[in-house]
Image (tube, rainbow, N blue to C red; front, side, top):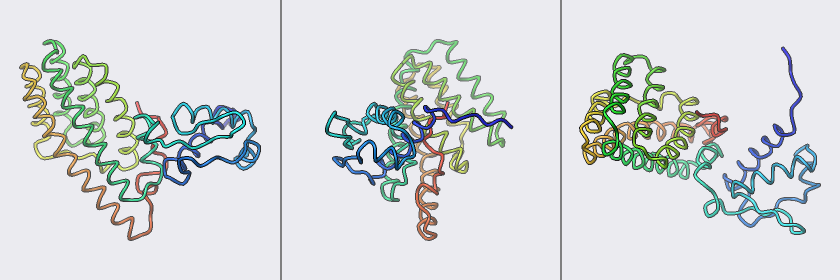
Length: 264
């Protein structure tokens, strides 16, 4: 086995991850100043150039502000952050009530975004594009009982749906949700649930899109996701209660590698 040297970029990324986690978890608070550059580099075991590279990345994320002669201050990410912080936020070790709220809101906004994408697809999709969605649905029906295949095909169904919606906004939002979802499912595969009538409810969505019925497509997809989300959220709540009794935190519950940005 060959082990290569750790590049400065890799070290900078690790520093970014560590400081980002501290900020998102609230252990570094808005307005708080980081230690002086020389001191912080020593604590982190790096040099000042690599540290500056990491700080620039954190600035781009809206997490800190560096000013010459005034040091580096922590920003309120709720005011300055963007949607790509959702994955790292779940991995940051939030206390259970905050975790419940954030996860619940992610599921809710995902439902809204995908339901609107379904409505747009019903308005815009060609017969050939609708056939693509029907093709994925046929593969889902053929894979019932194969959990790993269903996880992949479920994502493929919604990927095709957002593509045929003709909406760039829908596709970019989907990409963000996928990164969070895939990291979560990788650590806790039991969170992928097939609600009762799973293929039939997806078939109703596909039929509404093919038939050019946007209101029905929106309603059918919202109801489909609501059923699955209710079950998945119940699993998370039960796990949180168990973790609370055992003393495990949300980082241990959701997995230490969530939010690293390795989703598709």
